[in-house]
Image (cartoon, rainbow, N blue to C red; front, side, top):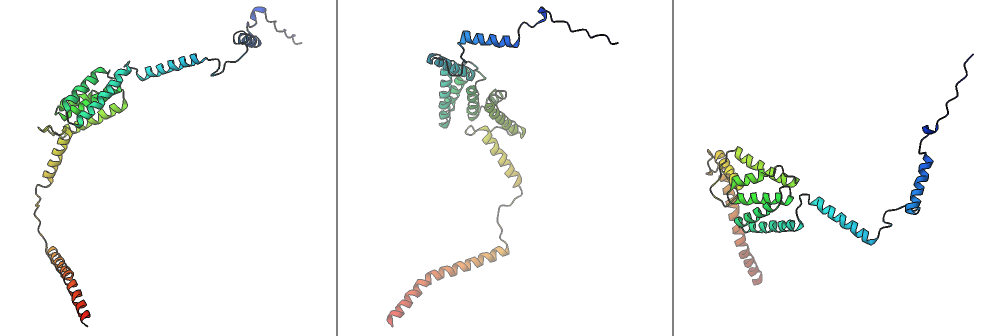
Length: 246
């Protein structure tokens, strides 16, 4: 015979969970009723105009701090933008020394990571290039190869690659300072190319027999055309005179 099954042991009081699902729901209802008066707090409700204005002000300040992670004051940023515009106008009038001074002051007033500082450094390199300070301009471009701003870093990379390409072809710098290093180097490149490819080229023109025959025919046609233009009015006058006589 099979032994009777042992009934399961009854759970003791200490084994019972201290919080049941219903007890938690009831507790949540009591808290909502006690502190929220039984109402659910929805977005945009229960906020006074003063509190809403305060929150908006805090949000604007947070956005401003995120934009200026390097801690630059707004008045410094405004002054830097004004100086960049002023430097561009000075470059138009070829006042490179004054533009260099403005850009150096702007660059020193801003931290390296700032976008305006990167723009000022790029413009400073251009001004130095225009003055014939090629090595210093190249150093300015190379200093921006690791700049945080993507556009500044991209422009600096292109300028450095152009300088390295010119150095690879071993083109020396010209003595004149009217044009930039790039323009003068390209001029030397094109000059050497033309001289190399036209070394044994005779620029004098020698007409062939066919060209001479074509030239004679064109001259003959041109003579007939001029004669026709001159004789046609005379013939018309003579015809009209004969017609009136009869």
